[in-house]
Amino acid sequence: MTISDQTADKLLKGEFKTFEELENTNIDPYNNSSIEVLYRRSNKRGKMIYIIETIFINE
Image (cartoon, rainbow, N blue to C red; front, side, top):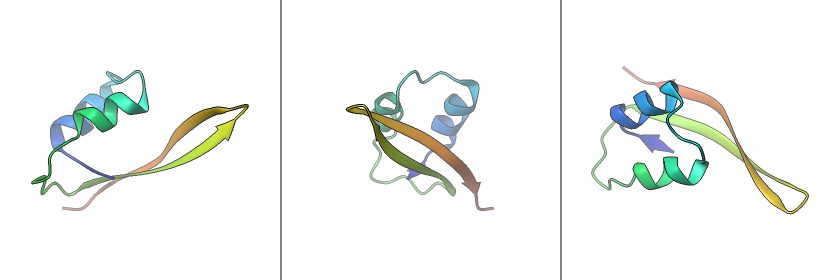
């Protein structure tokens, strides 16, 4: 998922409590940022778990 610089800053500061907050903050169809997040989803006991694996910065 491509995220903006401002969203990456908030993510690294721990300002998001849920993955949905991250997704909803990152709605920008014209986002030309070079920051991408690699994440995976896992279903544990009927609950969806999101794990951020890596943050890529392409400068």
